[in-house]
Length: 237
Image (spheres, one colour):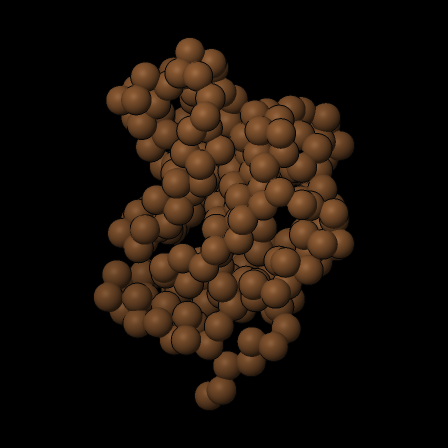
């Protein structure tokens, strides 16, 4: 069957249900984190953070928000990196699903520098908060076009140093390869279903360049990364 990737899909994902809970949710969150790590997704985000902070003094505390934090694996990695490099990170994760936030807290008990909150990023209260760096890893594609525009605008206003967006390239090849990954990693039905839909809700490079132009974002870099990701680093200083 031919895969149509000309337009972003409007199909919902199971994970879009913020009331979802239970063992299936935990298994899916862990599988997503595992695949993200093995395919280099974490390195993409970490590299983006390093790019933004490389000229900052070591003694400066840097506040970092992870939007749609999942099980918190990216924040735990940042905490470990900060400790090794003598960087002072103040780390915050938010997710709209209460069960996801509870699970992230359980996994991060040994990391007192990480705080988690249940919050919907579309809420006005969230939009009044400010951080040095905002991370958006595999989260932006969950939103429709107007919401994406709004969120990138809000992030640009909130982030004092910059934004790191790490999201999926929409392509038929990526879709077919993910089907293979589903077999190799023995993904459950929810992970397979949502993963395939996520790719169809992903982006083309020209769409992100167009978005940057529409929002008058001048200082940024946008690069394709393996595996079928875009690393979009926006400097807000």
